[in-house]
Length: 135
Image (cartoon, rainbow, N blue to C red; front, side):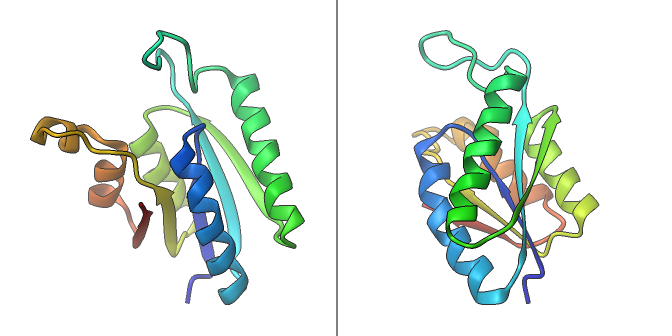
């Protein structure tokens, strides 16, 4: 059913929590797992520090994810790309023929503008395949 699963990750707690769901689905369906991280230029956190703009940081994040899945007996492929996260996630899903995207959900804020601008919302609207959002 889910031959290829795409798991986009960043440094968020939500991405780490979604990893448990990824393990369950990949093991249950014997899926190919592709872990993606997107390097985005000029992304800063609340303290003004670069979060996902360092290629070295992203490479380490992907290596840690690969080790985490390997410990569960899952061979994960990793992809690092540069660009706008939502568009890049959907492009990669299309390129690899993903049957499912699994991603963590961040709080969408209290305003309509906040929910319209979220990466999660954009992926849901642009994805070429089903998207499973883990709260």
